[in-house]
Length: 93
Image (cartoon, rainbow, N blue to C red; front, side, top):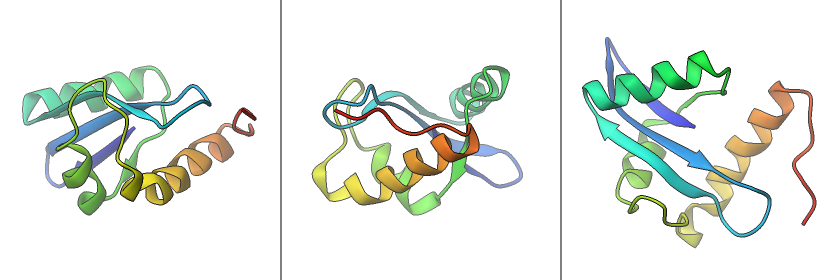
C-alpha cells in the first residue's frame, strides 16, 4: 500500500499483487477515505510507504486496473521493501 501523510492523510492508494502481471489499484481516496485506507492497513499489519509523487500518479489509475508500465520500477521497489519487512521473498512467477 502507498500513502501520503502530512498532519493528516490526504491521499492514499492500496495496491494488490499476486505475483503474476502487474499490481492492481484496489482502493484509493482522499480525505476521510484515505484515512480509512491507512487505518485498515495498520489494522491488518500491511506495510505503508510514504511517497507523495508516486501516490499522486497511482491515484489517477482506475480501480481494479493494473498500474501503468511507467510505474513498474517504483512500485517494484515498494513491493520488495514490503516483503523484506515481513522477512519473505516475493513469489516467483
